[in-house]
Image (cartoon, rainbow, N blue to C red; front, side, top):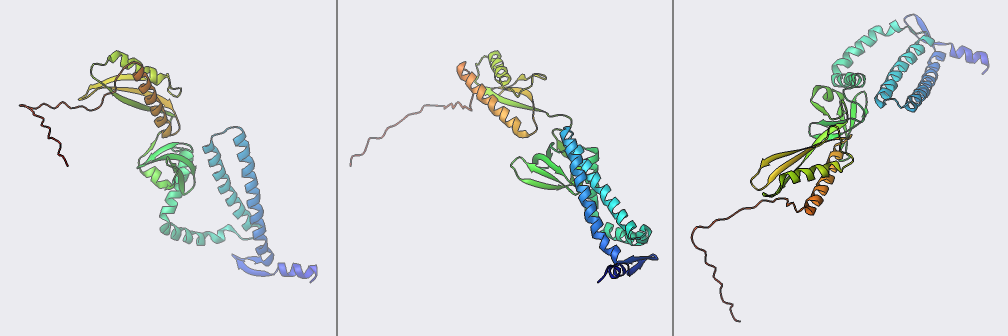
Amino acid sequence: MNLDSIRTLLSETLVTISGQPVSLGNILLIPIVLLLGFWLTKALVKLVTKKLTSKSKDPNLIHLTQRLMYVLAIVIILITTLDLINIPIAAFAFLSGAIAIGFGFGAQNIINNFISGWILMWERPIRIGDFLEVEDAKGVVEEINTRSTRFRRVDGVHMLIPNSKLLENTVINWTLVDKLMRTSVRVGVAYGSPTKKVAELLLQATNSQPEVLSDPGPTVIFDDFGDNALTFEVNLWIKSNVEGGLRTVRSNIRFAIDELFNENDIVISYPQRDVHLDGSLILKREPKRSN
């Protein structure tokens, strides 16, 4: 087969759309344009991501930029492909409208989650790295996709949460404005303990932890005269991304409190009960039985 025969074969009209002939060459051109376009898009997105990462830009901004570039590239590739094969976009107006109506009725949840994903990435009420509390689950946001958000619980389990659920339901974002977290440690000491000394030791144990912030600083509250103890509470602030930071600091403070109380003879109380008996009580010991 010579070159002229190949040209004749490629120029042969296979179908006519809106009066425009579509040849075999046009059909074979489609995958080439698509592959080249997606390859260029991937390379461009990788280059832009590398530039933004080197400048220490916000991961949420990088993620949003990637999504916008992909969507824009898909639109440009489709329009370019149609133009190269001489197919007017208006030819698909009626068909695309019918498909859109049918798709809208059949995929309302998908569209809802898709739009919600773009709202999350644009308005950024939830960002990558935020510590969230969703219903009974707590964890860190790892990735925000167009349909769902990948969420890693504190026990290491990954969850995929539909984006619409994050917008429609109440979500507690512990790190929305800043990473400051407040916590407290309670302890009860025996009646008769020097309360001023107890408060001083509690502050000393709290301030000895490097994670505890000095502004705002910790405060000690003499909370109550309990049934079995004098109850104290120390309130403190730390800067942390996850709830595990709070638990670790509270544990370290309790270790320090126990050590300081032992050194200063402060007794941590425990439940006690006084039993009063009316009348007399006789203890009778039975003699041992001989075999």
